[in-house]
Image (cartoon, rainbow, N blue to C red; front, side, top):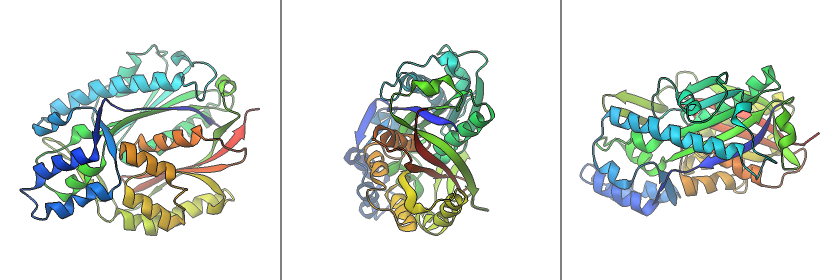
Length: 365
């Protein structure tokens, strides 16, 4: 089985408290919504305290073309991803010594907030001294499910090539997609929720030499994965692509969908592995928002402690789309785990879809 050996996270330079973004939204939306004060409660009720952005607040006061947004996305996403990769490969919390980028066999690059051809992984390889033979596997359009999907695809790659080392890089600059002239409630909710962030994970096959580079006594081993697609659900979450850029699609029904649809999918997956929900010690959930976390708890019978790490990331970083679940994973990897502890990594995204992975903490042999 392949293992997650290291995780790193990166936050862009502009930190904004939720009170500041609330006031910005009040000024922008007040002329279009007579009940603006009632609607603005989504900012406080969401329990987000702060978020990080790749541009200063003044940037949002002006209109920007799709080209302006996308050029900035390519530049900053390449820069931030390179920094996250270097941090992951030199993370002394998890690794005994630095991993040379030339030892990386494949890069799975996950992003949905901009467009780039050649893809971002090629641009990153021109900044860092990767082997020119590194496999490039860009994944686009997976949104919030992208982090879990990237981990799952890395697991499958390492099953085929058990000596391989794979980097999963998730980079989303949600702020650059902001549409100041979009007066929809979806945009108002998105303004209260989404943020920018980058995360990188090193996944290595069971015969990789890097397995002996693990610093901690136990490490998370990937045992099984599952993808689930809800038929005819394209309108639940995603982008509308228009002349000025990407417009958020965010259905108000997401929490209720989770409450009715999530548990059967999770239970079926775990039963296939001979497990029950009560045997999961770490619920590594992508925190799509407070209502989403509440729906997780209601659907799966989780305690507040079960979602504490997810809630912590949501409070201090917001919903960064694909990287967010890796921010949560990092918190669990920093904790002291026992041999035999099980974890379930799960994220929901456009499709409407679910990606989940079964993890078990094991000792190094």
